Structures are given as C-alpha cells and as structure tokens.
Length: 97
Image (cartoon, rainbow, N blue to C red):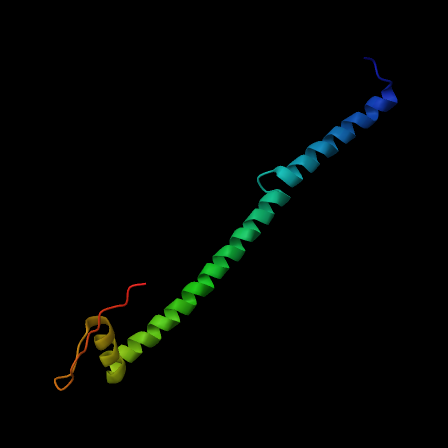
C-alpha cells in the first residue's frame, strides 16, 4: 500500500487531531469526566442543603427543650406516656380491619 506523498501528508495531522479529540472527550480530564464531576457537585450540594435544614431544625428543638416547658411536657406525654396526677387514661382496643 503505497500512498502518494500528498495523501500521507494529511494522514499525520488527521491522526494527531483524532488522538487529541479522543482524549479531550474521553480522557481523565476530558469533557465526560467534567460532566460527571459537575453532576457529583450538584448531588453533594443538595445533600449539604438538606443537612443544613436538618441542623437548623435540631437547633430549634434543642432551644425548645431547654427553655419551653410545654414542649418538654408534650414530648414526655407523647413519647413516654407520662400523665399528671389528676388525669385518668382510657385505653380502647384497636379496631381490626
């Protein structure tokens, strides 16, 4: 296969261009990797915002537990079944479906 010199002259730059294009798209720092990293960043930012909201909610609950006796009483009643001395508890059997 003996190509004329002029055709061989175009094969080398075309090969170099194909090589560069391949690594620009598929390489470790290529366009596809950059897209994946950006998607990862978006996911991490969403989790961070969710964690910040949860943190703020927990801070408000801590303040309420330290300062609001009614809130503390409601937690004790709901979670632990506490009652006052003058209260009567009625328990009814649950209906079966």
